[in-house]
Length: 496
View 1 (cartoon, one colour):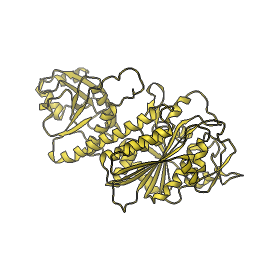
View 2 (cartoon, helix red, strand yellow):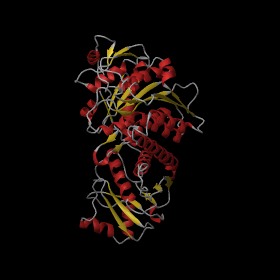
View 3 (cartoon, helix red, strand yellow):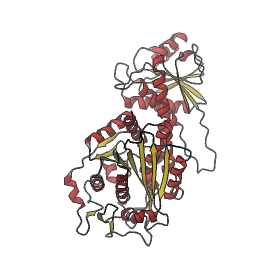
View 4 (cartoon, helix red, strand yellow):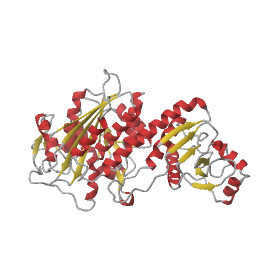
């Protein structure tokens, strides 16, 4: 989509759709009141009759109003005017506005939210979220359907502002919001693709395609021979039963100074997870194509920051493999040696994400990182603990954890700080190896993070367990694009 900050009066702007705010049980104000006066009080009359509601996210489309040059006007409910509008409520309202416009034939729209106050947020934030949600609303995944995709008419959005001094900041925020949604779209595409298309090699090719023609971005993918030479026995134990070769994908974005240490993002890329010999139940197993959403979110984040031309050094490392129960598959009770030299007793082959991540996290040391953040659909236990609303956050550095928490709050892509206490480490004790790959039924998400922590002692590290947030099931089945928005916000804060 194309976005533009406009300082002209919204009522004189020729547009297919004009979005104006309205409040619950309040007098009309701002541009909405101006339009009401120009159309002989029609809006106030409809409000009085109860035909227009001001509750958060409520929309009402009006046609042919005098006093403006819009083909249609959408009144967007923002709740009670005397109550602080939270960031969460603003996001909800914007999503509803985008959906309402998408349902019309409008090819362009003008959004006038200039006089809307959001608690603890500025005008640039409102613009950023508007661009992000409007671009995201136009996302479709129809690549594998034989019929043509339904046409999305909306192509251009004007964001109205009264103060010309804000135009530069708002324009930049619109660009960043759009770029974030472009990264989310890549994440969704990769997550939604089936396992017979999106293989480890496919992910590697997509990374190389992203780097093509970009002087700041380079891509490479290590094959299994190269990983054996690096003694990545843990990662390779996961792909042992599959005909699909594993890949360790590395994207290196040099947007900052040469001397600046990079932030490293590590993504779990299990392109399909049967559970291996510890086979999963058949019901819902199709959703295990989403087990590479950590990798997808890391690649989506790299897409977004390259679109923004972010002045920061960032390295992405994706551990991609397919977990299958073949004749050469790793068995429960097998012991493997990780790149770090630590030996691992594999008690459950369905706890494979940590096995690929631990070698990737050891590999990340070579970049001498400022910080490392890994992202993984790691445990069903995290879904039990936090549901679909927040990603689980673990870290060996409280300052880093707080940065990610704040980024999630600003982006509307929340995480929750979980404990990483030494008491849980003993659950990983093994009689036969340095460490077991599972820690028993209690605290499963925590013991998975404890496992990873043993490979991250050389740097500041955080782990995002996105098993509950990476995709939706049911009628709305599909990848969500999370936590691209959180990661991009985190990197933007570091860049600034």
